[in-house]
Image 1 (cartoon, rainbow, N blue to C red):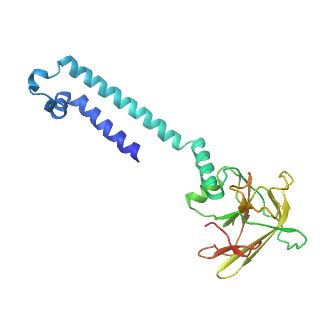
Image 2 (image 1 turned 180 degrees about the vertical axis):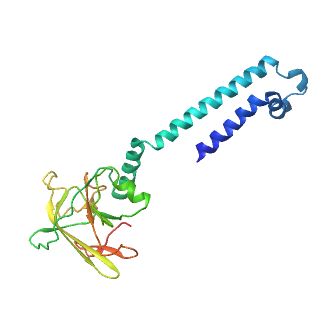
Image 3 (image 1 turned 30 degrees about the vertical axis):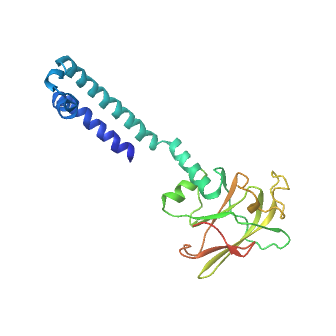
Length: 224
């Protein structure tokens, strides 16, 4: 917004210089001199002012067009997506993965829920998932798991006030075991191991004001 306002003011001043350079000089510059008539620019100086004004307008319009073109470019969308994921999940690298089977398996360890995000028409959810592939139809919730963990099953229990997501699994084959050791949980690290794994969830109804509970800890998960 600041660039738009600044560019508009600059073009207006340049256009004024093209149309009426003498008037512009008398209104903006003449007051600096004790004898303005003796210091008024020559006709050549006014012509150069007009040329400078035309050049300024051309430069501003070209830069403005390039800025608009960049805002619509795939590179800008990808950069926005990485920034949105870094803000929400702690890292910009993420992988959208099919939801694990809904099987309660007590023989596996419980996998902590890193974050969650609602899916809808908001630009925030669109930025989070941009470039990660197609989100399954009906998905209205995304749960994120630290890349150090591998979730093999997932159960979802809905009530009127909450949604409990319980993930079971273990250490990712690509992660050093010490990183995902239960004695050194994700909360002990400053950021998760990339790529964060994102699992789509289809709820019976939109999350709304209900809370999301991490079934591995019984505490409310972070997100919205």
